[in-house]
Structure formats: C-alpha cells, structure tokens
Length: 471
Ligand code: 4AD
Ligand code: MG
Image (tube, rainbow, N blue to C red):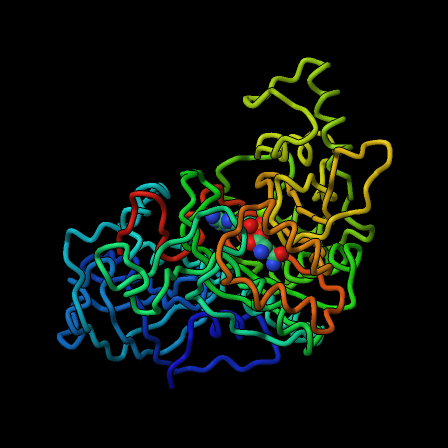
C-alpha cells in the first residue's frame, strides 16, 4: 500500500496506531550516501518537510542501481519499516524493491546545501523541492482553504467575478489591455471595445450582494503597477467580500475576524512548516514568528482603529521629535507612503491598525462620502478603511460604497471617468440599493505576514513583476 511520509510520521507519534510493516512510498531523492556495506537515501514526497530515511544494501544485485541514484531523482520504494528508537529519526525503510523513474542530471541546481531565495527565484520551476518552498506552498494551500472555509461558515456565497472587463474599478489606470489586434482600433477588436484584465472583482460583487447579501470573490487580479517593490506583483490573488445592510464598523469586524481565524488555522495545521520557516527567518526579531501569530490569533481585543486625520497628526508629531521620512512633506491630503504606514503600526501602535476616513481625493470613486465636518468643510473624507500590519504595511483596503446615485455621478465627473461602461454600476443605486461594504485582502501580502518572508516573489508560485515573465 502507498503511504505518504507525513502519515508514517503521524502514525509513529500516535501510540494508538499500529505502524505498518511493509509500505510503499513515492518521492524524490534529497540525498544519497553509501559505503561498501550500506547505503542511505533521504526521500521526500512533498507531504511534509520530513524526509524518510531509506536503507539499502549496495551489494545486492537487485537494488535497482540505488547506489547511483542522484539527488533529485524520482523513485518508488517498497520496503520494511523498521523502528529505530535510538536514532535521529523514529524509523527507517529497508528496501525490498525500488523503481527509479528518472535519474536526475548532474547539473540539477537544487543540491543538498543552503540556497538563497534569490538564487531559487531564478529556478522557480524547481524551488518547491526545497523545504523552504515546500513549507511556503503548503501554507499557501492552507490559507486558501481557510479563507474559503471562513466565508462559507459565515454564510458568504463564493462568486466568480469575470477576469476580462471593460472597467478600471480602482481608477488608477493600471489595467493590462486584452486584445487580439496589433493596432489600437479597439472598436474592431474582439469585444468591439477596449478590454482589460480585472484589477478588482468588487464592482461585480456589489451587484450580486444586492440579492445574496453576503458574497466574496477569490481569484487572480492584475495590475500594471510601475512600482517594482517587494510587495507588488503584476498578478496576485485577492479575496473580496462584499456584504449588504452593513457599515464601516461591520467591515472592520469582518476583516479582523478573517485575519484571526485564518492565522489560527495555520497555527493548528502547519506547525512543522512554521517552525521550519521560523528558524530560517531572514530578519530576526525579538519576537519569533509563531509568537507573533499566536499573539494575533489570541488577541481578545479589537485591532486599533485610527482616523487618517489622527495619523497625520501623529506623523507630524514624530517629525517634530526628529523622525525623518523619505517622503517628508507630511500634511493633510497626502497619500500615505508605505514608510508612513509601517512607522505607524511598527513604532506607534505596534499592532495591526485600521486607518479610516481617508481624504476622498486619494481614494477610489466608489467610496461613500462622509458627512462634511463643519470645522473643516474642505477636508472631504470617505468611509474607507485600510488595515496596516507590521512588516508589510497595507494588507487590506476597503470601504463603504457610495449609495447615492447623484453623488456617484458627481464622483464620475470628479474622478474623470469617461464613457458609459459603468452605467450598470451606477444604476444599481436606482434599483433598491442596500448599504454595502467590503474589502480586498491581498493573499500574497497575507502570506508574507504569516510566513515572515519579505519578498512577494517568494509566496506566489511563478511571480509576474516588471521585466519578469519567466516560467
Ligand atoms: O486597496 P486595493 O486596491 O482595494 C481594492 O482593490 C478594492 N476593490 C477592494 C474592495 O474593497 N473590494 O487592494 C486590496 C488589497 C491591498 O490591500 C493589497 O493587500 C492587495 O490587494 N494588493 C496587492 N498585492 C500585491 N500586489 C499588488 N500590486 C497589489 N495591489 C493591491
Ligand atoms: Mg489600497
């Protein structure tokens, strides 16, 4: 019978389980060493970072040439499982028969030594065969399942929003064009108009929330953002819940609930992966990775909530005390830079922090205008919320949606939105629009936070970034 190595390890820790004697395992050789008398293979099958020690007799004719099996080779081994209570590993597999499918060539880049993440990025097709990337992508799977489970358990309906669209939901002009022509005569193009890859499923989600009440999208998102940073990818995954009869407070509560629940699931289900990443962590903090996550998952109180206006005040205070920012022109109305965001949650609040009520001019056209503050009639704000977390900056962006048809039309002009492609979206406000709110959570940023990895290129299988379209 075929066993996963992970199952064998779990069984061996469970006194109530009987350890099977003869087992078959599939996997890839991590290392092979032998003397005249005995040979050892370290075998990994992807089910965990644990390797199975395989023992063979190099002198046996029928050892299927295991003596010459190289690192990286794919094999199936059937053997007897022998307990080794006094050794490093709880058991080893003594070979009865072995099948070698493919001897790995000698120029295999993933040898049994430490490789940097930069080096492995150049070998993204092979890097998952290291424990670091095996851990990262097992955690990515867990996080994705947990997100689906969280929303399903909270009665959200999973909605598939389109990837090809005629709108720029965020209005930032970062769409990738989808075309079948070589000129820009889009009226002759496939859709008879200019089409692009979606930057957000929100607008479509809003339409469905006006009947199903609670929906969420979870899929790839595309942005031709020029910023070539460690936190931006041109293709990334976003989770976007949208729910009606809701306000900013409900939105904040939902966001922190999903963060805490998913982190709890990862702590419960990916302990060995987290432990492995923790001991490899690039930046050593006073607080270990698992401690950090435990603290957030167990955090009984709510995350901090601060208005944008207050943040500006705090940044100005910090400046007065001598703090210099790269972008040092702090005043009401500026778009917060990631250095400001990180300073706020790393140095001032020292915890995940929601910033709310941003200036309308630096946010998207669909955000609900707040009542005008009579003391500052010029300072128009919207019911927006960004969740900022230490080490990353912005993890979540969301808002209440403008539900007033006239106001939305005004925004259309103010934000210079041309054409009529969004008329259906405005019309929702004419047809029984219930107050609606939602947010977008960047999956890769969340993974960076959970795993302590500091480059977005390492938490997505095949990263797409400016001047980089490999694999
Ligand atoms: O703040 P953003 O742009 O919000 C929206 O797209 C809204 N439509 C969401 C909504 O209300 N339904 O993006 C949301 C999140 C960001 O906070 C960030 O985590 C992630 O998406 N994100 C990126 N992640 C990686 N690379 C990029 N280029 C990203 N741009 C945004
Ligand atoms: Mg944002």
